[in-house]
Amino acid sequence: MFNLLLSKNLFNMDLLEVTPNVYPTIDVGLVNSSRYWDKVELCSVPALSGIKEPFCTVNKHIDSDIVKCFGTDEPEADNYILHYSSGWNTNRNKYPLLLVHGAGLDANSYTNLYGLGFEGLQQKLVKLGYRVFAITFSHSHGNNFYQAEQLCAAINKIKKETKCEQVDIVAHSKGGIPVQIYLSSLGYNSYQGDVRSYLMLGTPNYGIDYLFRNPLLNYFIYTLGANGVIVWDKIMSFATVLDVTERSIYKEGYFPGQAQIAYRWDETYPLDTLQQDWWTTYYGGSGLLGNSQGIDKAIRDGGFLIKRLNNKGLEPGINIATLAGNNVFEGVAFNVSGPSDGLVFIDSALYTDGMTKRGAKLLDKTILPLNHMELLYDNRVARWIDMQLSNK
Image (cartoon, rainbow, N blue to C red; front, side, top):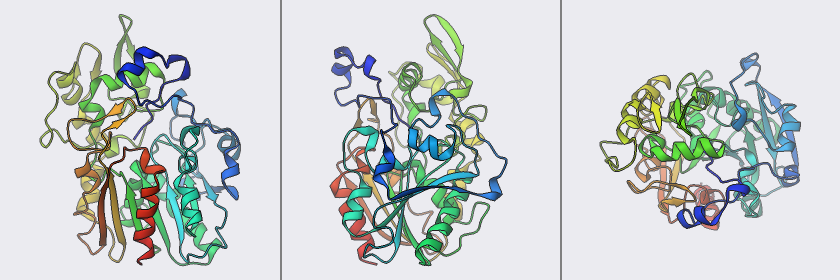
C-alpha cells in the first residue's frame, strides 16, 4: 500500500539488527526504465481535464523516463501512461493483459522492483506468450475514481490497438480498487463488458487499517522521507510538534486515494495495547508521538468506499481470482496482529462475497508463502496467473 524503504545513508547495522530484510533504497526511479517496454505512450482522459491532485515532495514521480513522458513530476489527472511490452501485437495469447500497479508505484514495479534486479511479472508473462500492457497512473496514491477513469480509457485504447473486444487484468494491492470501481459501474463510466478475467494480487478487498494499528511505522515513514501516507496530522520530532497534514490520510492530505481503502479490523484482530499511542492513533487523539483524527474519520473522508464496493458487487459475467501472501515480514513493513502478507490481512485479500453477489464468477482463491511485494515478481505468481487465464 505504500513504500517504506530506507535510504542508503540510513542503512546501518543498528537498523539491520531490527529489520534484517529491509529493502536498501528509497529511490524507485530506474535508470532507462523504458528499455523494459516496446513503447511508452502518454494518453489523455478528456473527462478529467483541469483536475489536478495534490502532490508533496515524497510522492512526486521520480523515474526520469516516466517524468519525461508525462512532461512533469506532478501530472494532472487527465494524463496516464500506457506501456506496451514486447510481443504486445505478436504473442500467441488472444486476449491482451493489462497490469495495474499499486500505491506508491508505477508500471515498472512489474519489471524491476525498486531496481533490485528481480525479473518481474511483465517479463515472465511475456515469455509465457501474453500480450502485456501496463498503466502508470498520474498520481501513485491518487483518487481511485480518477484512476478508474484512466483505467477505462486505457482499456479502450488497448482494444483499439489490438482489435480485441475484451482484456484480462492483473492488479496489485490498491491498484485493484479502481478496477473494482469500473467493473461495478460505481464510477463515472459504466462497465462496458470488456474485461474477461480480473486477477488480484494482495488487493485489500475488505480494506486495510495497517498504519492505524501500527503507530510507530508512521514515525518511520515520515522521518525516512518514504513515499507513503501516515495517519497522524501532527508529529513530535526532536521535542517539536510538526504539522504534517499534507502527509496524512485525511481529506486535507496529499494522498487522496488512501482514505478510500481504510476499514476497521479491530474487532477481528485486536490491537496491540503495548504499542505506543495505540489508542489515540486508532480511535483519534493526541499521543506521545503523534496526533490522529482516527480511523473512523479516514473512512468518512474516503466516502465509505470499501463498504460501497462490496454492497454494489461486480457486473455479471466477469471471471475473478484472488491471490494472498502469508509472509508477514516485508522489510520494516510487517503486520503480525493477524495472518497477512505484511500489509494486507489474508481475510481482506481473499474476500470476494461482495464482488460475486451479482454474478461475477469466482475462479480461485490461493495463498502463497510470499510477502506483499514478492507478489510482483515471484515465479509462483506468474504460474498462478497463467493457470487462471489459460483455463478460460
